[in-house]
Image 1 (tube, rainbow over the protein chains, first blue to last red):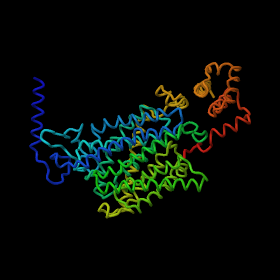
Image 2 (tube, each protein chain N blue to C red; image 1 turned 90 degrees about the vertical axis):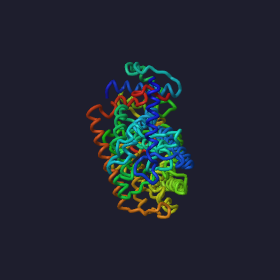
Image 3 (cartoon, rainbow over the protein chains, first blue to last red; image 1 turned 180 degrees about the vertical axis):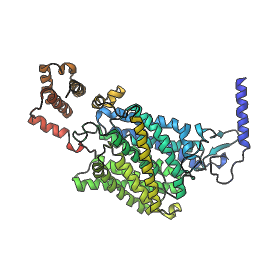
Length: 439
Length: 90
């Protein structure tokens, strides 16, 4: 009997939804459409892109970071990426997606999609919901695609506080940051009612939303947690740069889902995004290596990998807007600026940003965001870039992310505490926090 | 420097020596018995692994005060622990 009532309720719900008119023109909110309005090609590409972007975090970023920390912290560092993946997934389907990608105020979205209520797929009547931001793919695919961005952004921050943050504090910080910083900034930039979207700020795949955002939060973490014990007086030898090479390679390949996937279509713009991504990345890797060669008389693996990541970061906001010339210029600028960010600027800032999250993601994101305003090609995107608008978007995000991150960290510091004890740090987080160790 | 720090270093030395060469030492006894400590520190100084040498040298300094560097060990240590990772990763 209970089963029958349940079936009756479901049937009634389906009928009510089915009776709603499918929108003929573009709607400003997620809405129901007939299944034949979905593009099979776009959907296939977005499913593939989603998997590629998830691959960037696990295992890409996990290996990239784990290879750069000391042996006693490798497992703890990898665990952070993996745990954040699970944590943000649940937060995203519960509330994050709704806050970021439903219409609301210019500052934050609404709660219409709380726990993804209203997102629907009705096989029998041939209808399903789509996001107004991506009208040719099922909303479920768009939720998943954007979820992978929401996952990798806080996971990037973990590099700044590597080897010294308490696990519980990390979990709470990431949860709060995901909802209080990531979701609002994604709404500002990518939801049409967001204030930066209204202003005309260009960010194709997340130079501002992901990289400047993560870089600023990383710097806040580095300052709030303080330096690692013996930082600056003892060498902190990376565990295995081979892991870092594998991680960076996974990032590079996965980034095609990140950038070309952000076209939300299998079309010529996605093709251009993929091409300029490859070009800028290669140019930045060559630039960083050349700088090392000139300044230090040798080329290092970590330098070449770092240059590639710098190029990937910087081309991210520009990837759907620039041509090959722009990609080459952005690659050179990213290589130079991020080399300085991870060396000279790092010394100036006097913060122990363990794995150079600000130096590469923050600086690379800023370079990319600003140069998008310079090199945006109307033939590719149909819009021109404006340097001032780009600067407003970039620095507003930098300030918001930095300040709110500091506030979250302050609350945690004076409640549960941020840092492991000196003994735990000396032993290493693998053994002291997680009871595991690499033999 | 406290006894606790000596024990922590001894524990790290135990883990490192077991992982690199399979030698099992008594970390607690190492911090309590001078003769045993000197013998283990001698082994650590002659060890092929630079990290074992470094841990041994730090522990020796904690237990017995500043020590004169052994010529061979110092050269080996410098090779194993490049200065480039002091305060900077890249």
